[in-house]
Image 1 (cartoon, rainbow, N blue to C red):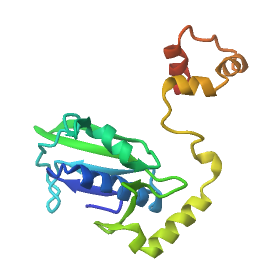
Image 2 (image 1 turned 90 degrees about the vertical axis):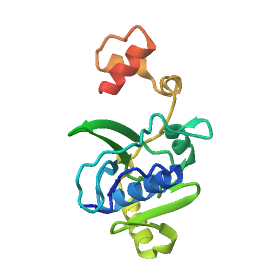
Image 3 (image 1 turned 90 degrees about the horizontal axis):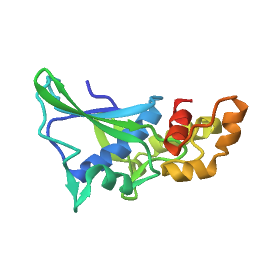
Image 4 (image 1 turned 120 degrees about the horizontal axis):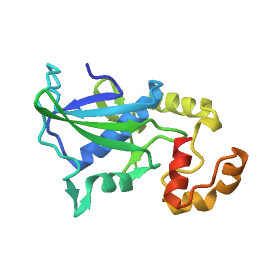
Length: 187
């Protein structure tokens, strides 16, 4: 069954709708105390049967730009999300995993959304939910948040004193950038 942090679709591949769902499911996951929200294509909304989908997010473009890149560009703050395409019982199913909101409500094209039951609404029209969301952000310890997000690999290495990190742990410093990033990601 759908929840405030889980939505089923069959073939709705409208980029603006997907962006609004990114915002609403991210914000609603925070409200529900979940780490992630989900949008799943290929599931019948009424019967919850696996029916498959024609939606292929990795092939979809918006104005010549890849869908994933376009969506990320339209979100503030930038959050992690990922599309997964899998075969289930001879049917294609697409899962969109969406990181919960931290510190600020997630906006899509400068508009914040939230789920009320199984409906997507503008957050500004739901003052009770907006207050509750800000209360959650205020109670989230700083240490559980991210210092910086969405950095390219070179910038990560520029900001970190990674030689000292490897020295302190008495680990050999990897020979190249890819090795350093791999070791840091493993930790």
